[in-house]
Length: 306
Image: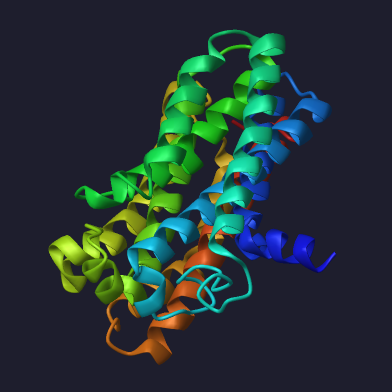
């Protein structure tokens, strides 16, 4: 039982809430456009949670092998699970947690290819590449944050829509862009406390390559872009009559206090007492924004105004 608890903790369950809100967001879009299968939604959501947990475990494995975990400044929002460097979990078991969870997720993906169609295969292949190559390869290239933004931000929304409708739609791709930016920014700001350890470990994250000041500016620009994108999509809906994004999605603007705190904190990267609360505000901003966007589609379905 103790081992099972440790294996579960290795997936960093406190961060898997992101996969749950992505499930809600993607399923809300599918329901709005006329098709929902709660069984498929829950199974796909479980597959996403497994994939997310697999990424976390594999990341811990490679971080320990590269020595990053031995130098990292661990916070509640960054620095890995800490189980391997603290001697609570053998390194090989961390790897096996990642392998087993990804294998089960693969089986779920194959099931959906069978029941929903072969057009899901390209999406699964790209997602798998983002998963497998992220820590050992992509993190050693410039601007690696695009990978989780795509693999854990945009593709899940498209995937949830496809498994319930059997097709893709350009309006769903447009709706998924804020999610991609949000997940991108989640990784970006969480890299701030790890910059020295990442530099020693050979990683080329945005803070390492371009410096903390430039990375902070990039983070703030991308955060503002989330709001600009949502407002622009709603305006396009009102002007064209085509629902690019429901008017109700403007409720996502209620997250502004969290995003402002995160942006201000990104300027104080030298002061951990200010940076760590900013990491927490950024997490809340991301989760609540995804949640409110999904709620916007539900409200539009129930009380149409667009």
